[in-house]
Image 1 (tube, each protein chain N blue to C red):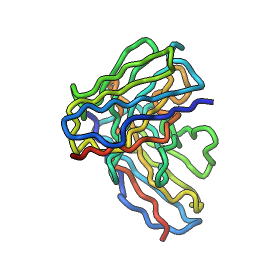
Image 2: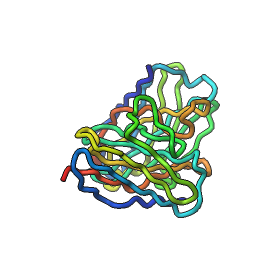
Image 3: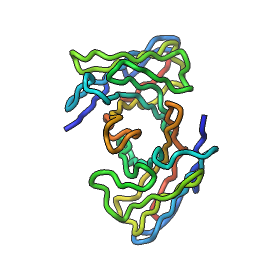
Image 4: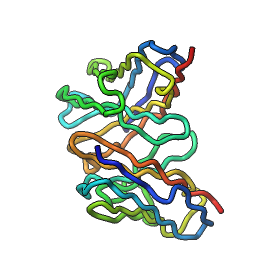
Length: 123
Length: 108
């Protein structure tokens, strides 16, 4: 059974760096085809894909964060970390961690989601 | 970037009625790379339909998807109380995922 859970601060100040951790179970990011990504949702707004990292350390980023985001993995801990620099009020959102498998029947879609974590940006 | 436009923004229907949701892409996309998600308040989205027309695991058969090119449709044949929620379409292309802005199916 695949599960994912996000953790990190609930409040950050403008210009600070946000670090979010996704801790997962039920699969390994050393297994060919596996990927973990991040999607955010500002309050009352639509979903926005941010970043994704694959088992082979390939990474891709969505256009909304441009060079502000970095995604990394720690396979020994079953964790994926998303870092976003220079946070601003527009970055206030619920951040979801998601699973994807290039070898799964549901490729290229997100078949498992974490519960999400709300991050507010305010001074 | 491919833009997905969903319509209508809100659909007001009664239980038992048929719901038809639309998703139009700004350019032609591969049907295999189109999905629909359902999101209830306070919850994460759930994958409903992938490959434009295949139901995900444990999704009831009252949900169906269709479409090709730039026009895709999600149909709920007979609305159950638990189906009143937000629905998003999504596409994948050029190593990037984009979502529509969502359609809210609300109880009339």
